Amino acid sequence: MKIYTRRGDEGQTDLRDMSRVSKGSPRIEAYGNADELNSLIGTIRPTGYEEIDEDLAAVQNHLHIVQADFANPDPDPDDPVIEERHVDQLETWIDEASAELDPLESFVLPGGSDAGAALHHARSVCRRAERRAVAFQAEADGVNEQAVAYLNRLSDLLFTLARLVNERESVGEAHPTY
Image (tube, rainbow, N blue to C red):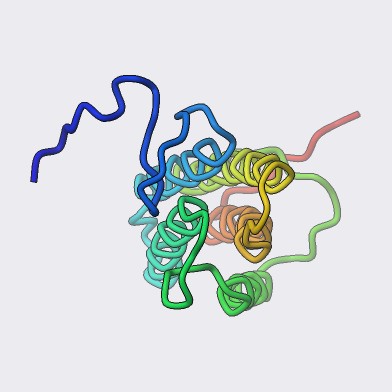
């Protein structure tokens, strides 16, 4: 299989059902941002913490499902889609990580250790991916609400993991001053 097809040279791309759309469409923006986030998470692993790396590996697989979900205008019952159980899994990981942390009492400035700062960066990219997904959802019918909720919850997980890594590496949190 060749990597290049030349089919995208005119600014169009194929969806999962082989229909053609502009590469600038909200649908493509939505799954393109999920792809960027997935790639960024790939640069964070390994963090040095096995259970965090396992969670991030699962998140990367889930993000691949988000991409497939957004790329499919008319999914069949056996097509991959994000489900409530995926969102629930993120909440479980957030709760587990939060159990090791002091309660959050104020905003936190992004940064810290290399892995902590990278997780904060991933969180901000995730928020952009969520905004693009919301814009796509406003334009198109049938957008999977669970996929949008997944991105919302994922940003919470990435924030919590950034705090957790920084805590484990004895890097204090910086807070904004007003």
